[in-house]
Length: 405
Image (cartoon, rainbow, N blue to C red; front, side, top):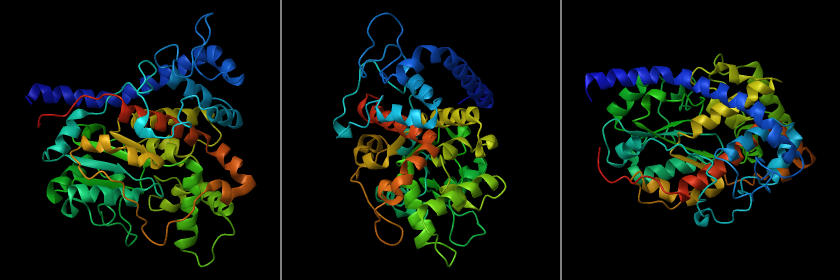
């Protein structure tokens, strides 16, 4: 790459945050106009697509216009929590009815995601270009231990950090690493160059965006049903590994305490208090939106506009991920891993300590289950978006990776 190309790229990277902010503003303004044509059909239960003419509304698999599915989800996110969940339960994106993700048919018109992840990063990892690596955004209690074992069997133990694929940065809390979300790009590049590690996992920090590493970093994550993940966090951190001698009375008590602590102790000021974050409401939106200087999303409080803007940022960032797999469909992600040159794509199921737990939130929370769903409505919108995006990534054609970089 010549010097002029280098200058051009640095300018493009410096403009990226401003372009992202402009996109958010444009989308929010468009939603104001879109509400009139979409919200009323949704409230009546017709959540298939916006009506744009006097013709009958299309079937759920045939939205009327490009971008209709994403706009529909954002319109649902603007509803009161109970109404939004009712709309999601009507399965507007056709994800709840999927029995086998590997057999889902790629649609011809109604794509949710038009953005293509960076192919140069995939090519670099596949052909082991120096400096190429996979960044795994580890959502605590969403299959991260299993993913590390899965990745290690494909790239080898020498090319993965020994502690659950999480590099050490000399953290003050013994035995807890994975705080690479706060590393500068130069530190991350130096680490990959020095260790030759091909995997870097980030569990305790929010996702930093990695805008200036787009050609080097393959982005991957595994996400789980929001309230099931919260219950699993309670069983692991609130009971099995609770630092206090006295266990909490219930999942409701522990999760409520952690959510309040997360909002009173923002992560930028208390970066080692990871337990408050893993037990907070709308954890996935926080994880993908609030890193990289987006401190305002650490506690939106009762500001619905802030919550929706955080959701938009989380979706925008996840669109750049090469692998964003629902935990329940990880077995169907083999085509995405084969693009990276991984050949042993049989799923792995590991737990860090103890035995496999039943984290069925309905069973654990009983009559409080719906209350927790409402408190996590933005995570449920993201969860719906992610499942549909995953199906499209796996089943729709992508540019091949044939030649080394």
